[in-house]
Length: 283
Image (cartoon, rainbow, N blue to C red; front, side, top):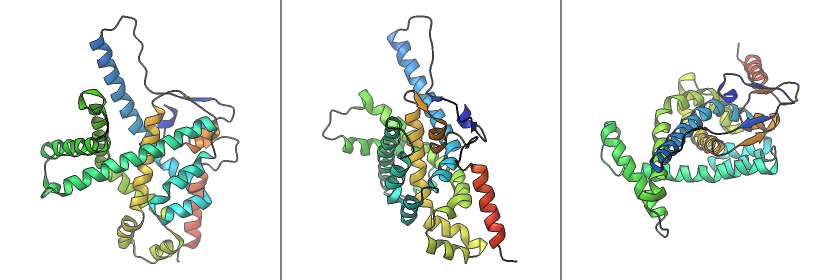
């Protein structure tokens, strides 16, 4: 629960264990009971992963902007995400670095299924005006269509693992839509951190009314791919036990600050940005 706090602090000598949801039983389980428990645990893990993603997202933003060379390439476009994540893996042990590399692979898959679903729905008329009871079945069809084409050479069936994949994709896309307002707020607060030097100068010359439109055009796509990476990362954190050092927890976005370390805390970075803005603000 440490990671879900408003401001999580780790002691430098701490050992941080992260694991997914668990449930202990004293009685024997039937196949049906075990299946139900597994489904409930999967749902609980998914909910917790998304909660953690929302809590960790702002922390991850503060981490990646410290990766000097890699963040500059990411500011050029969302395709720089892979190099940004690779720079982040240098902060981890080889075992825990694999977590980030697997997350970037899953992020690509999630991005692809969302793009495929978007393209599928664009072929439908007036989809933006559809009520949820009409939109949701169509979204499921879009995901099934994508997964079927993706696995056309495999022995892939909905009755096996396919339905879980479809449900997982559906929940993520549906949740992303529900988080649009939150991401809009994140864009307003952090979007300028993802502008190139020339874009930043142009942004500062705009009026306050023009800022939102400018950020939507020049930073929103970068925040979106970063969000999907964080979701993928948080999903993987639910799959097994991860032993993290305080420094790794910091770079993973699990904590805000490691006391007594030279790692820049979120509080210090916010104070620095506010101080810089105050000094450069026109009288």
